[in-house]
Amino acid sequence: MKYVKEKNKIVVFDKEDFNPEHILECGQVFCFDKKGENYVVFPQDKYALIIEKNDCYEIETEDVDYFDLKNDYAKIKNQLSKFEILNKPLQFGHGIRILNQNLFETLISFIISANNNIKRIKLILNNLRKNLGNKICGDIFSFPTYLSLKECDEAFFKKMGAGYRAQYLVKVLSQIDPQILEEKRNLNTDELRKFLISLSGIGPKVADCVLLFGYKKGDVFPVDTWINQMYNQFYCVEDNREKIRNNLVLQFGNLSGYAQQYLFYFQRSMPKS
Image 1: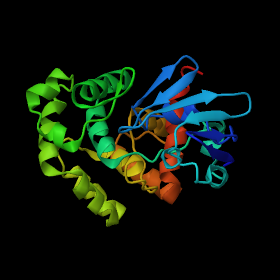
Image 2: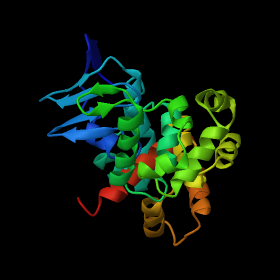
Image 3: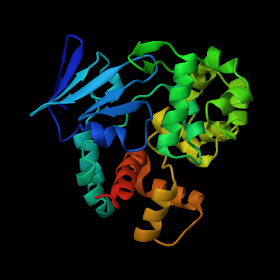
Image 4: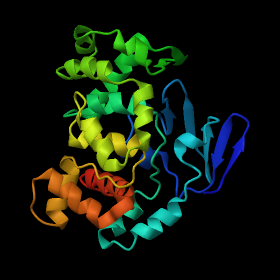
């Protein structure tokens, strides 16, 4: 990845391995908006504006780590190219990178994402930000702290639009805190998955999303409606998502998380492309 860090910004020259639309629209994150042709990203209490130039992208931020710029995605895509099913997805979503997201924000966001759509997920999270966060820039607010969220009751979360998930949020905030989540990093994937599923509001799919996007575990494969459709179309008819997950992890191994992102983005975009 060819990039340079300048004062208050990062310039990314390698458009083949970095594309903000691919990165932000592939289902891994909800703290972004599209402003004209540019993207605004606001994880935690940070703010980044991504501007496309003729031969590069300029990112108004000092946070190199968030965009995973030190990771060699050309190598990852080369390893995945041996799987025929990934030929078109790798071309279509060539600029995908798995972001280094805050673990606590990821967990809360994906509990809210359960049986939900992107537009509504972003609305609920923005409501939480505006009511509990601090102003960052314009109408953008920081993600609430654990302590501010823990003080909220079920009625508040319902007012924010969380619906039936409100009860899960109240309970999970009594079960964990950011320190507990960080302490679990030393667990292997299976142990960590069991721990996550034991928490309120977290089923297998949400657990796998937290493992992939929060803990950066490569040997997981979140299965939702789009992946289920893909599997039935290109593998065999199967509606047991646990079996689908296990079969795909067996196939892709430690690259499962990357494979999932390319396949998910391609499958979801097919009707529009």
